Amino acid sequence: MTDLRRVLGRWRQLDVTVRDLPLALVPAIASFVPAFHGRGTEIGALPTRPFDALAVVAIVFQCFPLAVRRRWPAACLVLVFLGFALDQLRGYHTLAGAGLAIALLSAGVYLERRRRTVAILLSGAYVVLAVALDLVGGAERADGYLTFYVALVLVWAVGSWLRAIRAAEAERRLRVAEETRTAERTRIARELHDVVTHHVTAMVVQTEAARYLTGAPDRLDETLNAVTDTGRRAIGDLRHLLDLLDPGHDTTARTPSLRELRTLVEQTRRAGQPVELTEEGTPSESAGSAELVAHRVVQEALTNALKHAHGSPTAVRVCYDDREITVEVSTAGVSPEPAGARQRPAGGSGRGLVGLRERVDALGGEFSADRRADGGFVVRARIPTGSRA
Image (cartoon, rainbow, N blue to C red; front, side, top):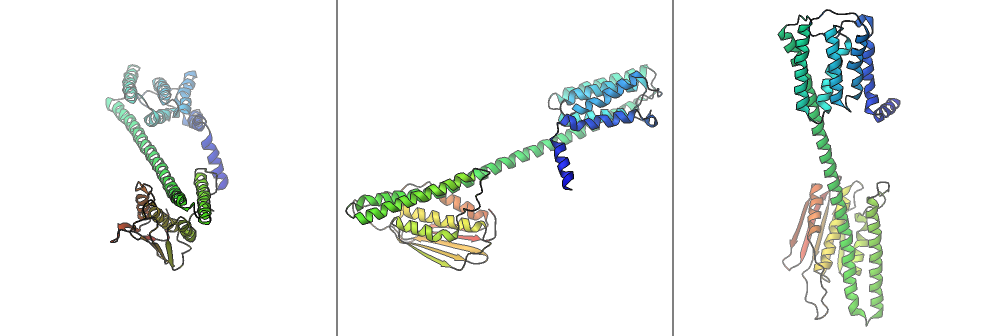
């Protein structure tokens, strides 16, 4: 079975002319078999004539152009029709006459331009052939010519139908490819937003706080170390995201998960945000994409807390069970700060929360982000486990 697939794969890699060559050779060879003489397509009711040199010419014209039926369908059809006309006018009635149906079907499928012109010219040529057959003594009645013409029209129609199916399939594949590219760009953009926004926000807040610690060298040194650690983590995460753009890079070993929550919370604390983490239950081994989405929910919520409620108590609560992961991040209202010590919050585009809602919805979960009565903010997410992003 494997050998057959390998052979078929190599066959498909060949040029279309080579692949269509057997289609030209088989009817040509069969036409010279004595048992098949006079048993081919017949129109005009002329008596069958023994083979001569012109019979060879007729067979060649009807068969060998089929090798280029996909590359040059119009030229193939013209040559085959000329051979067919010679075949019928001389009364050879060879099996090669079947080449006309193949050439006509191929033109209906592969002809790109001037399709109507080709159809009109072919119809006119058929009328000329019918008149010529009648002039050389053909006994075919008008209804016989009409029936054969209808058969030719049906073959053309089948080719046109196959062409429409191929075009629709090609359009569908292009649409799927574009949707896939768009989804991938959106996914990477979300990852960049989550990583860059969180780390850079933490660095901005820590740097702003360092301005007021010049009189406390120990705390200043601690804050600057925190900025450095945050920068290094940002560089590492960005390198991982850049690796996602490299098809040959193995990225399975580095995926943010709920097991890194403590690191995330500790980083936020070092940025000056009091955060309390509560975990209930045990993460499921088959959580799938739910674990990554839950991690991003906590990350974005803590980023917003640093931006808009720096210094306000923040609570992170994560509950695990076999069916879902529940996340709740709440921040108390912003308390007044001493004059001259107020941090300037970084502006937000709202893209993070929109992206989180889309991620949670894609897994069949629920997401909400609301104001609290005390002016704070609460983010809740219920994410079913066992799903795939």
